[in-house]
Length: 345
Image 1 (cartoon, rainbow, N blue to C red):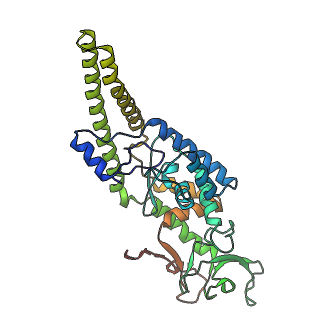
Image 2: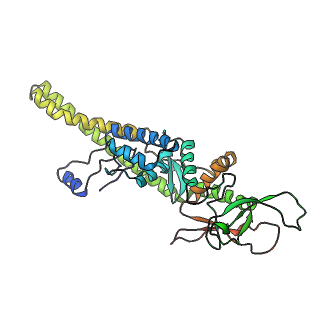
């Protein structure tokens, strides 16, 4: 298929490369998706999210949407996997991400509010294989052991016999009873302090600003083209009306020529309104202060969501201590990139 669009957003009608070439040879452009379809897609997605949070499976949603004639943006039938991927798509909440890092927000009303989107991410995290991570610990089920790469768990651990402090304290540990090596343990306060620094840094990282600029440039290019097409079609409609007024054509001939023109103008006007309203407009990169404020106001579950977004395809591991001592060594918390990328600390 040539030229894809995002489900729930304006864009060009999906067609094969051969169909697109045939239109080009005829001097015609590929039409845009009707505004009514975009509205229906957004409504179906919102209701699907509500139902999924209430217990409806992705498979059931796929069957419902297929039976109702709803198709993917590429005009295919829905599968459970396709629905699952759609529900947690960052753009649903108005977020633009690059390699798992939020680089900006789409102006205008998103399909989902942030609170609903966070609930979806939390639900997804809680359904990973194995024991559900406790929301009391930010890094459980996300942090990994630096020795065996197993996910870490959290617990309250009694102090050692020679420790005068009788209160219990919390640690992340590699659970041997669930397949881990059991050789990693780290005080949660020290690890979480590094997690906070990482989240603030990565979610406010301007490194990917080029993507935001490219996004805005594409939106401006398309808007200019739409405005040009509207001007041309309006001139043609005016010329048809003038010919009808001069009785140079019959009313039947006018209706035949004007009907497809009016339909095209309606679709172009709908796309122009979406572009001008900012639905596909430029974005604002979140600042460090904004991300820090979000972290400070968030509970453990929301912080888990922020950490997941900050990591993207990267992994965050906790290594064994390099030396003995009571002071937590920040170098124990290490970012591991996807294959082919350079590591970061």
